[in-house]
Image (tube, rainbow, N blue to C red):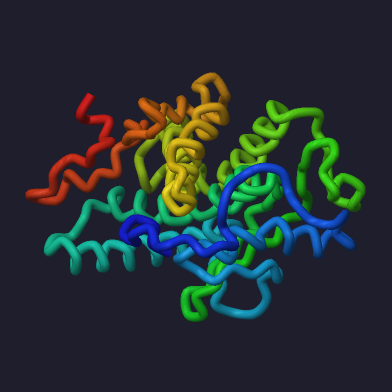
Length: 280
């Protein structure tokens, strides 16, 4: 589930623009709403095929399993370490491989909630078991148990939908949903990363902000998505550890400085990334 090496592709017409949902009326029920929530995102996301069918059968990695199964975490970290050794010509430190595993999961999980917020003004609530990845089949399943929306949304009358009063409240819903989903995963990775709560929530802040920046690249409107990320993460929204901090100049968005280092500098000859906090 790599998110760091894929070049942004051309954007299909199904993934274009942001704003309020469009359509003839209210979805017929919660399952229809969930399918609608992920329609544009699923059509345009280039890395995985997305389904809204709940996890069933063998071979699925879920956020719940990642949080609860120490042996699984060790297996994934060891496998990531071997992949990094093959790519870099040297074995990574254990915490470097663990951070990459956490990054790959947290980036996707955060985007699964932030993309519908940005594209549809709807926030799906995903429990740790509601996100599943099947590597062999190349499938990402997203099965929210609730959705938040604004007044006037055609989905407002659908059972399982929470209506919040305004855009500020919807941003709070998104932060709360991402925090609730990632909290047990971050706690499980803490000993592997040797970081305390602030450092772990710094990782979560980076993944939420950078996912929106990546979505903006896909849309051809990085500045719009970056501005939305800055509103979402202004810097005083615990448990998130800081601000998105995208620099916006002349209608464009530059590279933000991350709160946490990816630790790739620990490989010999690897330069610091453009957004590395070690360059401050």
